[in-house]
Amino acid sequence: MLKKEHMTPGVQLVVKDVIKDGVPSLAPGMPANQPKEYMSLFAGKVGGLHGREVRIVPGDILIVEKKPRKVDGVNLCRVRRAISQTVGEVYWCELRMSARLRDAA
Image (cartoon, rainbow, N blue to C red):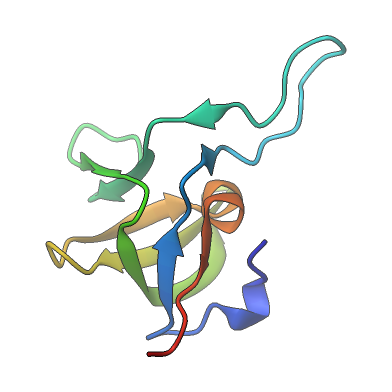
């Protein structure tokens, strides 16, 4: 699991094979951390009408642009998708569970 102190600008991450939302169960009997097909990167305003969603899939390389921080009460991390150079925000809880530091080659 990723730690905030490792998320400095320029750090490269690889999205794991299993993407999880990182949110605990909200009620007894409800499943937590259900696997997902993709992670959302929001280019523009998160959840807003003026933004767009880019699907991040297993194996994608992400480059940290800005360390995790709270924006309007939501923990986000700004990243750049290496393949398309799209910059946007991802949910920190999802990123920390679904990505790992890229090995130096």
